[in-house]
Length: 337
Image 1: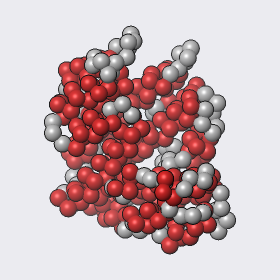
Image 2: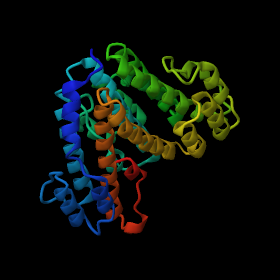
Image 3: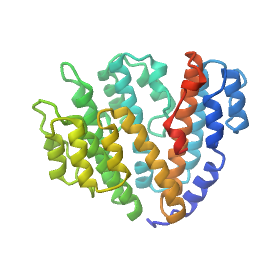
Image 4: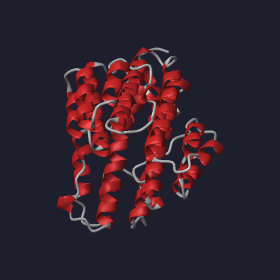
């Protein structure tokens, strides 16, 4: 397919122009109560029902709005390979949230916070996944729905005591296989996106495995297809005594730039690293809108901004419901939204 995204980018730009601006999101985080938050969403042209006055109901309404926005864009993505590359990451995030939530004993509503339904993981399935009592139930349900991540997760989940490390490794491998296969037919620009995603998966995996005394075969988890993290650097980072040392080795492989700095800063905190990487990706696509407007930047920028809006609004709603004062409600995503 052509590397000029034409109609898809035009639609993405149009949808992006209606997303809440950074100052509007900042005001939402500072809203004194849920009715005030609803009013701010209305001003930002995020349509909600008049009776959304609880955090779960509000979060559900905004999730449905985001799903409708994504569905509008999906109708313009006629190339199946491109659709897979675009939606696989969103679905990986959703499944990972389910796994982390069930192992942490989080309530179903909390597992759904900030997630966007996709054609392959619609709202009904997300709700069923969030209601599962254990990881085996999540994996079995994905298999029943014929989701590509299901078989790998089910294999990892049948262990006597499935742990998050093995589950996330299996999920990452299944995700990588999807995007690597799809990237071959999605055009040169999207192949670059796939290569960068595979590098990030290898970085995350090496950080997870660093400093662990286990019989895990680290070589099994290296994902071929990236450009900046060779197998030798991955193996060295995995064998490092801790995440900080692994981050230093990976940073040298990646070369100077923001990614190496983020690894050094957040190596020991995967959640903080994920949020920092999301901000960096947003800022990078903002810049690419000017320097490479005919590539995938408008499409990716819109998807990342939509995800950021949902995450910020979800955080605002639950912060209000939990009585967190406005001066303690923050989101790093505001820096890139």
